[in-house]
Image (cartoon, rainbow, N blue to C red; front, side, top):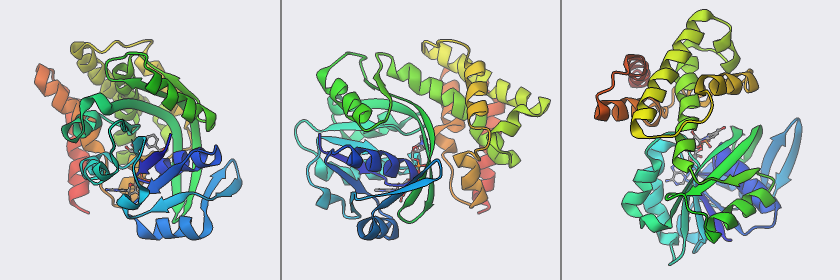
Length: 303
Ligand code: NAD
């Protein structure tokens, strides 16, 4: 299955590198030329548990040169999705599939505005990666990846995508409730990212203070209330799940934290901000999420 990944930052490079090793026809596309040039000249360096591998990967900053794709996978930040989808339409053929594994809400809708909904599939991933510099990333997390059809059906094409990822060493399942899983991932991001980012904390430190614990739980409770109203089926206890992720990523500075540290735009609009917009539609007050969204937005404006 010829796959083109749009957005070859931390996650795009991780998936691209692993798929290339497994023998899939794979192209990385990124507008960051220095990064693409480094991959083309020296290969992609993936550091994993202290060991660095250099992997030859097809990479280009000219999207058209990647050619027609069976699967287009988006790994740009959420505020770049619309432009990335537009750019990638040149790679489309009759049965091309369009997949996003990005965080947050709204990516599906942005893709479906430009692409026939029947060609769009959805996913979430618990894999984690950090960009180290041009041509170089660190594999930092090994959680499960889930993919699914928008209508939840078990199709051959979704099985093929899952098998391809599985073969590349990316633990993947097909889910019949992929929208529920997108929300479950949202709970994690809503509870951790903006809070740790604002306070300058590593994830694990959120569990060290009663105040941050209370704030995390309230942010997640608000999100759960909106999800329930929306008809999202929630399995297990979301707060326990968020705590579990915090424990497992104790030493991480979350990506929104890194964005603030380096004075970069964040994905707040697709995470707590998206939750606020959904809450408004149902008339549910979510004051903690509103406040934390506003705080991040003001910080972004001072950059
Ligand atoms: P990143 O910033 O490292 O990479 C994004 C890349 O997209 C950049 O290299 C940028 O140059 C490129 N880009 C922007 N516009 C483009 C365009 N039009 N065409 C081609 N390339 C373009 O981001 P990331 O950390 O890899 O995250 C990507 C998505 O995955 C985000 O939604 C994030 O929330 C999600 N995610 C990240 C992790 C993680 O551990 N980093 C884990 C799970 C999910």
